[in-house]
Amino acid sequence: MRNWVSALIPALVAGMFANQAGAGEISVKVTLPQINTSEYHRPYVAIWVEKPDQSVQKNLAVWYSQKKTDKGEQSDKWLKDLRQWWRKSGRDQSLPMDGITGATRAVGEHALTFVEGKEPLANLPAGQYNIAVESAREKGGREIVRVPFTWPVKKAETAKAAGQQELGDIIVDLKP
Image (cartoon, rainbow, N blue to C red; front, side):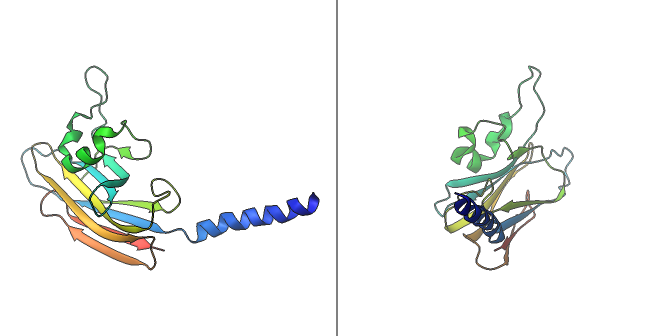
């Protein structure tokens, strides 16, 4: 019995560290541009991993107003303005989504990092994907930007796309 236990513990520890050592990473930088308008509202933003057919594989982040209504209910009424995300995933979600949803963000660059083996990237099958970023603003416009990538990450690389109005640069850094 003692030999079996003494052999098992090192194997388990090695397995834990081997899994972490090869963990791929996706960092997403989203720039929300300064928009000069008389009535500016922070945008609602959804960020997700989508398959080549544009179906949602994994939700990464959803930023929306966390204010309560007069009746004390969560104010997620305007999430429908994130049309692509809402139709493909949002309306089927129970909000707020733990670890995914958060408050709207101010103008500027916002960085998110996701690690292989941990939610929301846990069990992401190998293949071709897009990071999709959609923004919608009250009394403003709506825009979606897609950045293609391959999973799992074989070599470090950076992919970039830019919005025209509601989104600025979207930079995706991939690390093996």
